[in-house]
Length: 292
Length: 300
Image (tube, rainbow over all chains, first blue to last red; front, top):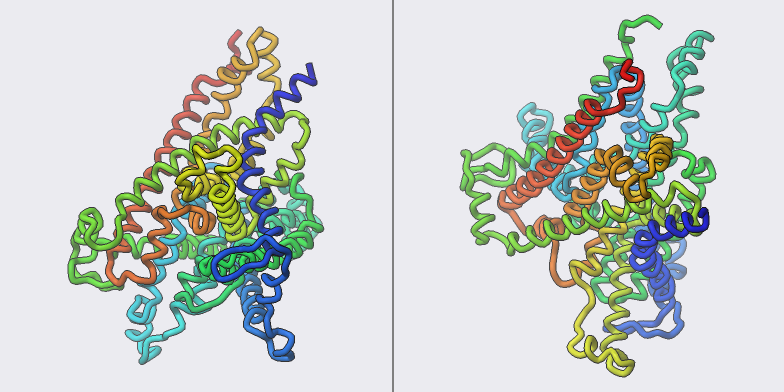
């Protein structure tokens, strides 16, 4: 009986296994294999070669101590990633804290959470281009500042700049911080907070010594989401950077457009390595499975 | 603690309102601007109010064939939604018992969720590229002549594109199923079994009605995530484009408000689907409350 039940369970899970095997695991394995293939202008050659990697870092050692383009690009990606991470964490934590501890009725909690979720169900591209009428040279912000006499010339760095990229990334992905952090906070036993209060802790001490440690799983999960999304992003950086800012994701896209599959794969493996490094150091802190 | 709102409440409430304005403000700016008059530009002020840009969209004069992309995205979204619901519910049921590979499947789903999309997309593109190469070179020799002759590419909306979307929607579906069954009372099923229900009857008449509101939630995620999906589709969709891909392409070339009109239209579909799903969930929950358990109500 249990044997039969187990095989039924296995059959129920089989379709999902099949999809992930065909469209996630196998492609991933192929990326790793092909990253070590040779290639010429128009096709990949199934022969062991590290050209994909060496071409990527061509001239990097000769250039030292100056950083070559590729290293600069990776550094810039990490910088954008850290900036976005810090901002989404700050905003996401504050919003989640408000929802979890200051909104008292269940109904309002659901309504306000939905309010934060609805944009997630709408298109990212639209949420990006939505900034154009606000930040453009003749946009609302520039007009407003000029009208107020703060500036005489329109500010150019508002749009198609690193500023607009980070702004859009924060705009798009703070949601991924709010949900897991809120989820952790809602499970904190309110009596713990009362106990801290009764023991004479100030609000700030309660926050630092009780709430933040207990919300850590949510913070880690949210951070994993934001870091992996931003590290691989090429669309937001493309659209909001006016296609002028390079990133790890854009390198892969460019190599692919040139049909240099092994080179694209090599860059994907490097990106994957960096991502795994970040995630594994984050998961040291928390066991994801326990948090669902 | 006394019941008066602390001062921090007002500060945090103001912060929350600012965040919501930050979320919605820009979107509403383009919804308004899409009704720009015929001579209006990409920014405020409004130069009259008209439906010019919408009619241009439907006439197909302004930009590439949006109608076709619209239909493609809609079809793909519906298929992804249906598959996401069925596959996630089945897998969610499976995870309530131990089975071989459960841990691997769980971690694969999480990995698929957090994998940078460009890598997944590249992998699928590569997979189909290798398949194409194989079919054109060796297909005939190994007896696959029927398919290999005239083989151009296996890539397409409902092959590589569908697969790419599922790697993104299924993890969400599975996580929602976990959340459902964490709060599910297994004794209800035992009761059904004791009353002689078959496993299918138990699922159909006991489990499904209880989890239905959340299953609709899975469908909502399935459709909207597919409808707006961009990064994973980008390399893996083949020769045709979905609506978000067309939109992204337009961002660099278009200088007229038709792009806002298209954005408004796309969002309208999203909002329609979201409201339908939310209404369905509310109706179902209300019904559950009415017809739900009479335990503790003094009825014998």
